[in-house]
Length: 306
Image (cartoon, rainbow, N blue to C red; front, side):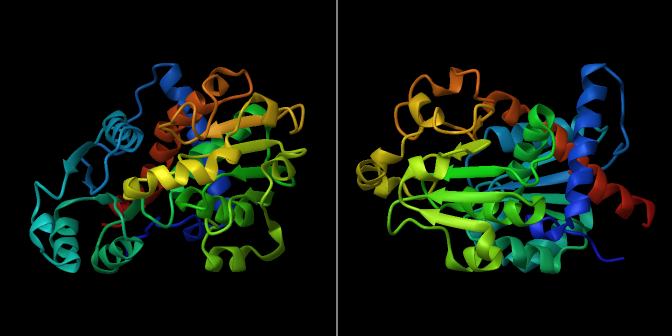
């Protein structure tokens, strides 16, 4: 039986993704009630980090422990990957000892190459192209507060980065309309826009994107690896700050999300994360619950068929 990977939201059907969210809500309830649930006892997740992390590391490591398993943190400094061992060779060896591998990396091709040679499930914990685990958490958080997101209007304001690319995939998989407001030259990759066709609209004015939106999202203006561009980006993106007055143009039931960490006073005004319309803290917590559902889905079948 070949391993099933999760590198993109397109690796699941819309029904499977919705089932993951429902399961995340169930697992959240079990944890809140203090119910011990350990379906992954003696299973081990390897976590490869080429990029710094707070929420990704905490949620996957705590999630595996709560499900009865263990997680091993691996950085390039600690492994032969950092000394030039081919990704394929590392995948063959690591997947012979582990039950799943989560990778947080720069080049998306690293994930694809690792998955091609892995005997166990590989999960995208973030790449320069996509951040699908974050979108699962976002969709769970919206569902808990407002129900089904299908048919709703979502606005992305800021950089056409990996989060924006993943929102484009989410628009296809969860059936919502997406408006993206970004400065010229900072659009999401054309191949993602081409996939979504008329489901996604690209505009320059954030007010136009946000008008009537049920969900407004943003992210930092300079992602990891773009620190050298930070000053130039700061100037270019100033008109794209999301603040309370911009949110006032959205639907009266609007929710605001930020995948964090946030640079208060830059992409978000200093007070926005504390606005009652912001659900960024719930969004962060839900990384734990929906990723537990994902781990359960990917690891359990492999275990039963071993």
